[in-house]
Image 1 (tube, rainbow, N blue to C red):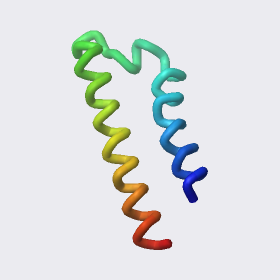
Image 2 (tube, rainbow, N blue to C red; image 1 turned 90 degrees about the vertical axis):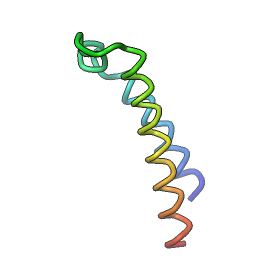
Image 3 (cartoon, rainbow, N blue to C red; image 1 turned 90 degrees about the horizontal axis):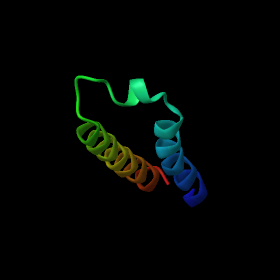
Length: 57
């Protein structure tokens, strides 16, 4: 389970980097705010995955 969680967590930033810059950072929104929102989303996703794994283990 730990390896599965690690792979999912590593996949989120890899997906961010693989996305075209014009999609990652639209012109109407500052890049810093988009990056902060992405980081927050990763934290929420990892928290949910950890809770799911520990609840259903």
